[in-house]
Length: 71
Image 1 (cartoon, helix red, strand yellow):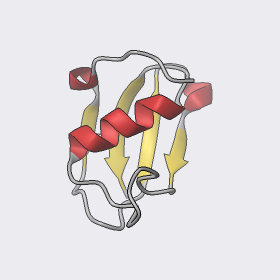
Image 2: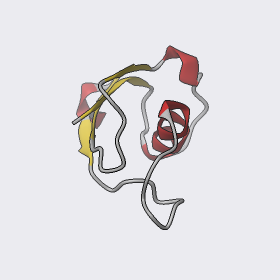
Image 3: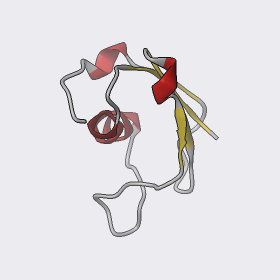
Image 4: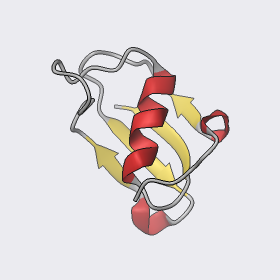
């Protein structure tokens, strides 16, 4: 699934909190989803910042991510 994507092209919306879930909108709408797993690379499942969110999530989506919203 992982592919190269310029994370600066991904728009982010909302406030990033320790317990944030994310609505992910992709170029291919069939890949759109809600991410509720937290950060799988962290034992507390938290993200430090939006760049960490972007770098982590692009590993799990086949098409380019257009935007990520916290929810």
